[in-house]
Image (cartoon, rainbow, N blue to C red):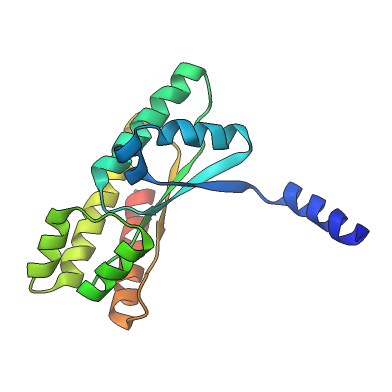
Length: 172
């Protein structure tokens, strides 16, 4: 018992704790930035978003969080924005099941695209690039996470390609 407690105490000092940010909840309720500030006050050192498909929701959350931090004299913590590609309607349904809100216009583009994977890749690249510029303009600390929610090899490869392209945009 004593060793477990001692180990747990050590591990909390070694690792930084993060929280989850949900831009779509901010759209619905308008208070996600306040929830994040409460999490930050209790020790969250960064926030990770669910997969971003609604760019406006993410920008609204970042903007409200940034200006509330400024009002309170609080230093903002980094946001890590998650992006993923969607190569099929089955993957789209799975992402919805995970709780990702996909705007109807993106769903329509994917449904009617000759190559839904390439359309999704392009949409994610444009959204991430715009979010990078927005965060830089505000001076908000941020990072990018690219993941594949699918086990299909083509979607995994597209995610790797997206990560490589975004890496060059982050460095340059």
